[in-house]
Length: 623
Ligand SMILES: Nc1ncnc2c1ncn2[C@@H]1O[C@H](COP(=O)(O)OP(=O)(O)O)[C@@H](O)[C@H]1O
Ligand SMILES: [Mg+2]
Picture 1: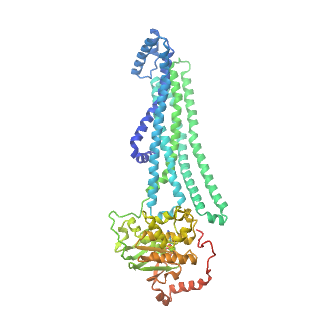
Picture 2: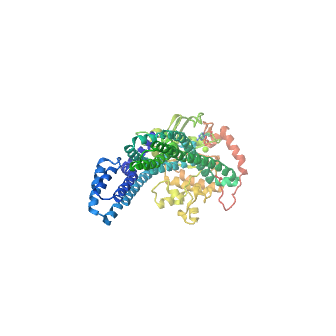
Picture 3: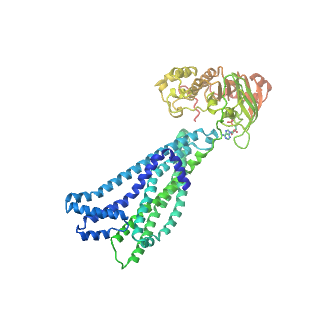
């Protein structure tokens, strides 16, 4: 718990000025309640005693012992002075009585300030934490995202909400309650040290339920957050994959999954409620035992104003104790809830920029896969890849699915580092250059088009932030996209919906090509860019691609061999190895793997519909 508080303090650090101010007001606030009690006693004494000298003497004796000496002195002086001044004057009486509302008002302002400042600090801290977590996750390598589910990661970002409540609300309690508690204790000890000990004897007993329940809270708190993450995952997958869920009537299955998580979530929440609310009454019960014991001890002895104060303070003691216990439970829950957030923040980034990045000039540079081997996990997916791509040339990669084609381009983009060997551009190892530098010089068009829920213009313009409207349109023209864009209501400003649902597959692909054209990078990676399209869209997209490839070093992965016949060199990958290299005609003549792939496709080709059904543009792959 101490470590956890220390972590929070680390997060708060930039705002420590306000935080300490909040703590200061919190302490004042803690003193406030006993102060109100004291003021009431003072006003009571002044108002309800006579002003005769002998009464004053009696009063001096009646001022409770818990009041420090100088206050008592001042109190008597004031009383005498007030008595002399007023002698029954109504104005003075009103003045004295109005002390109570005044003190309450000041206490209210102090309480407001302490809550306000704490909430201020909490919000800033948590927003900083959110940004830090988001930034950290975003920069983690691709491998991290293949292992973690999107929905879960999103819900982890909302885990910090628990922390926000904890800092804003609970810390106020954490500061003011102990102060209140200690003040009351001080009053009690001053009046009746023996009685204080007797009445507090039972308190150690209270620690038992607290420890038992805090363990429960920690476990339940972690479970709540896990289930929330599971809920996030189910929702994310169900909303993004809604077409499939509808088409396959999976609604009931998904709802049941959701229900299961909700029910675990609910029972854990109830566990927290029980664990948070049970200790309070137990403590009160223990306290009442203490009071009963004390009364027993006092039976037959004389009582006084002091004793009355003592009993009042003892009764008042329970509220802060109860609050502190509830706070303990809340903190335990927050600790459990945010454990995963801190774990995520601590996930090391395995693909970092070198300390002294070498400059990269990809234009006119040769790409060299130097004896590269790579595996995602235990087994190797690529083995001993030797490959040189001359600048401005087009290399085609073909092979069965799973042969490692996409993996090869992942290494070129340094989404992963090779297990053995090195990938170089212009003789520079990719591990020596800054990732940002590398990615700015490679344009990628993949089968799976990633579009943002934004306007057409912004979706193209993100290829090169800062590009002018004319440049965006120029790129769209080259990508053979301008015409269909103009047909949309709104043109370039038309929104395209989530993942571009309002566009056909071919249109989406042409937008992503326009984006790549706008980026104008010297190296181009095409990963099955036309594979999911019908033949008409494919023709349009192929024309756009031909435009894009001009003058760039291109690595083109193609499922349909017809698209790579003109490649400068074709590499055939099989189980992670390059098994054949050459031009189309040479490879056909060889009669090997390429020949087999080619004849397979040649025989399949006539099965394909020559024309897609008119109207819908076709080519959607059902996501
Ligand atoms: N993120 C990943 N984690 C683990 N294995 C992967 C991952 N991506 C691909 N693979 C595996 O690596 C092999 C090559 O995949 P890939 O390069 O995508 O093939 P291709 O693009 O040629 O169809 C496949 O066996 C695939 O199962
Ligand atoms: Mg692939």
